[in-house]
Length: 345
Length: 224
Image 1 (spheres, rainbow over the protein chains, first blue to last red):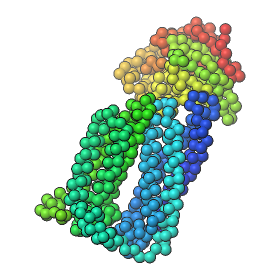
Image 2: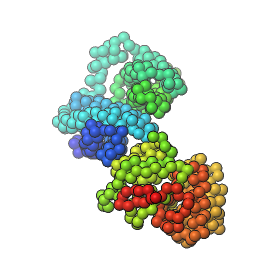
Image 3: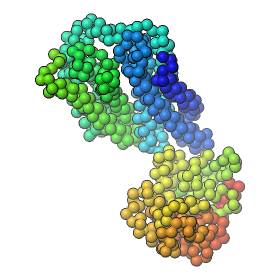
């Protein structure tokens, strides 16, 4: 298992990212305390050149970590299933990877979210020739370093655990959790239709919010964008439940199988990658919108590019929610058209 | 400090292999004026011109253009600003695989404002420089002087705000130098900033240049 190509690829990508972080971090620790934008001596000009290089390195780290996350998801959901006795999908593989595997996954998501916000700051900063946000994006990049280090370390622990892991119970564990929570839904009293209604209503609201944010970015204060971002995160939770309890039966053609990892199996067309990918985009654009709104409010010289990014985040947010609804609703409607009935209650 | 033109402030440039080339150069090349920089071979004239054009970054100090610190711009901004610069390189750097007219039009590629009249302007400039009959010839088929005049036409297309010329008269006879000076005078009249680096005594004698500098041991001094 430790020699599996995807494990090696993730090690390699983490290794390169780590090396780049080491160089970038080393430079940033020298640049940030001595940063003097009003001075034009040789040392400051060298710092400016160094920071430009750090930005390029940060972009590479982001790209490499996106690939590493995709490789990890592919490994958990499909490639490593055959290597874990008893596993049929990513749920079983994650059990074999133990808590360290889940932590690594979560830490990678957090690292990428932070790096995405860093990219937003850099892009807005790029609109001005004098780099007024240099210190902020430098610090943001430094913040991502410990997260990546932890993610790599937990991944190592997870792979080591997986080697000595006995058979797992895979989706049976999910059935047990569903049964203990009251049957059809994870939370007792909430039916799949309620999840679906909540998800579609939420998507509509997010779509409308995104539309307004796109058309009228100037009207949105950072607290409002922050509140909308929090609501979007809440909606993502509802959307995940909707996928597991309402849409999944139509995709998996099994009455009650609330397993998100099964949707990532190639056997089911890997439709989960699109569904959860769109939800990830909603989270990323909510964070991007908040970042842009804060910059627009606090840095008057960057208001125009920050508002443009806020508008772009609104458009992407609305479009992602809309696409998600179409993708999650299409199998249900197709089933209804084909069979003339519903699976879920 | 929002002066128009190119303003060098304590400009220093060092190369690891050649030591310090420019030492604390401070000078203002105003718009609507022509300046001549003379100096011995290897004094750093071309380096100064490349710094002014944003092709090199200073080791310390700044270059301000029309009140903006262009030498400290990040790469995308510097590249956009460079579209306002016309330059004749000492080694010309013409593209051998295309015609003289196409060479002249090259600076218009990233400049949409330049396009509507670009073809007519290119032909007109080549005619004025005595190259009208050679507009379809590749640079390898024309003489050194003709290539240099084509490079001048390339620098002038699109009416750049900053015009930088490195030894523009090296291969020209006296008649051609008169034509060159007339073109530079027209650029000055439309309020461009013209900086010429040369050690040609024929240019040193021209009345066009209001300010003459001499570059010696990395320092720029105003000549009386």
